[in-house]
Amino acid sequence: MDVRDRVLPEGIPHLVTQLATDVRDVAKAEIGLARAKAGFAVTRYKAAAIRFAVAGVLALAALIALLVGAIFALATLIGPGWATVAVVGVVLAIAGLIALSGKSALSKGAGE
Image 1 (spheres, one colour):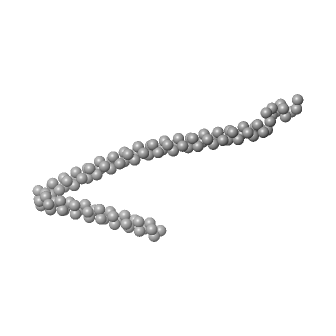
Image 2 (cartoon, rainbow, N blue to C red):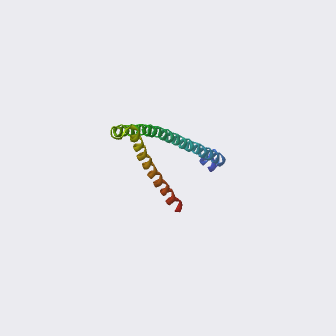
Image 3 (cartoon, rainbow, N blue to C red):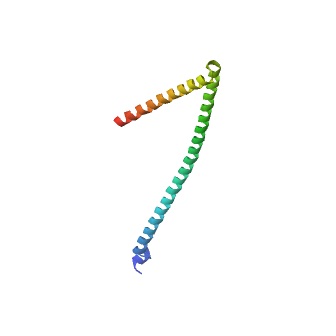
């Protein structure tokens, strides 16, 4: 019996083939793991995004209720029409200032 038969009974070609198969299996397993992690992350972020959307809608509803309340409060002093004009004017002024702030931030970013 030759020494090679005792140490490597199946031969080097078989071992190289087995190594290639093992590498392929490990690569497939790693890809599967990466896909599973990505799927889990997408599911988690999707649930969080839905919660943020619901919170945003509720916050908008609260803001609308606050503005209606402001109109009703002012209506006793200056009448409903002028109260509406005053509240809408203030809200539009605030929106304009925020828009200018956003435009300024974009201009600073473009110059860099």
